Length: 163
Image (cartoon, rainbow, N blue to C red; front, top):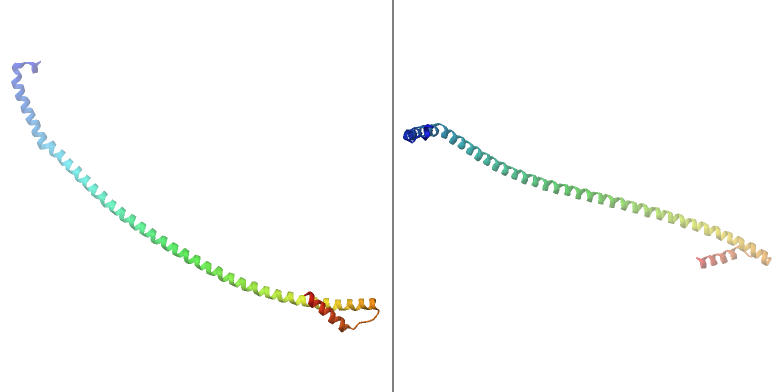
């Protein structure tokens, strides 16, 4: 093997140095600038992406703040509308209830008057029946007729006491 021959060792080192130098020059002039350029482009792209991400995060935060403000405003408006509707319904219910109470009072007064009238008619009819019954009973028991005016006064007096 020629690389193990120590007599030829020195020329091999020279050729190694020449090859290494040529390889280094090619790498330094061709490959390394391309790699450095690719790394710079990558770094610039990363920096741009970070800048874009930061800007988008700020825009998202602004959009979230605007959304929350809109939601708060909408919620306040909805509560105000609901409160107004509730108050309007309560006022309408109170108005209806007042009208219903007036109608009930009117009906009650009318019915009470009708009942009082019916009671008066019944009392009058009852008075007439009582006077007739008293007249028939006194005629049958006493065998004499008592005046209708006297019997009416007695029945009236008794009805007043019972009332």
